[in-house]
Image 1 (cartoon, rainbow over the protein chains, first blue to last red):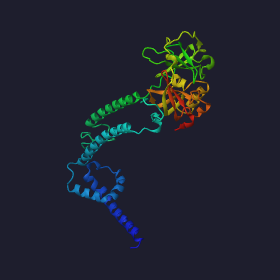
Image 2 (tube, one colour; image 1 turned 90 degrees about the vertical axis):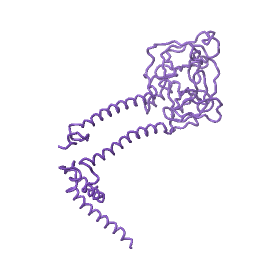
Image 3 (cartoon, rainbow over the protein chains, first blue to last red; image 1 turned 30 degrees about the vertical axis):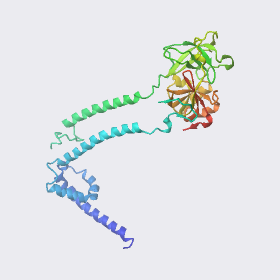
Image 4 (cartoon, helix red, strand yellow; image 1 turned 135 degrees about the horizontal axis):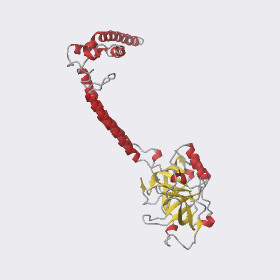
Length: 133
Length: 260
């Protein structure tokens, strides 16, 4: 295998992958989306925005599309949104808890910078003198 | 129209005029919690910040007349006798009008019992009088400390310290101005020091419960002009600290000063 062959094969594979992805994206946007997501019915302007993601993730899209078309995975027209919203709620609660804790912990544990350094007693200071905050 | 478009399933739709009922209650509770929480957080954070003061003289008290012992080195201080709740002699820094110090001749006034009249400035435990006229010598036989000797107590050495903080003029820091930063703050402080107003060092941390120090050079005399390059900057200084009454004096070794 010559050194030039590897990038050539990688390029060819990427082109082939993208070509299949473009076909899957077009098919999904034209025929699949309305079936798996009732909320998308009648809405077209946003569909071109999905093309890059569909091309890159076409194997996953195809698998999900197939599963949804066979009636697996979803129960009811809004089941997908419900699942996502539940996940969103869990993440929201987690972040709403974690972010204040992180902020307060950072405030409590922050290092004392050189500008806030406390007085330092140098060696020849007599004993018994105390530093108070 | 689907169920979520009618807002029955609690799903937010950006272009819809109506909020879902459940989401509306949630947003109301959240808004109250956020507004209340942020307000409480603001109160808590601001409660930990030092009061900037009024930036003004104590006009309510008017002119006061104090009697005490005057010392001129390193800078003019009027020493008041101990009082109930004040076990040590109390040092009141002295300044003249505006950006001028009090012209004291140490040869004739050092250690004398005087009476001074003027307006007071106060920030925490630091106190300054803007003297009207010159302090007037009183009968030296009338000792305001009742002969206890508290006013002429020997300085108590507290050792050598390294501190981080800012050199300020004692008048603005004592309350004539609010704390500030920047070039104009620095120019103001230097003009005050050139005029003879006592410099104070405001430390990032306290020694013996005090975070401001009357400044002197390492021999206990007035600071040289070179100190102006260090004024109103974050600096690290080293020197001996000693207690005189309730004042701490920082006898700084300017050769070891460092701007941070």
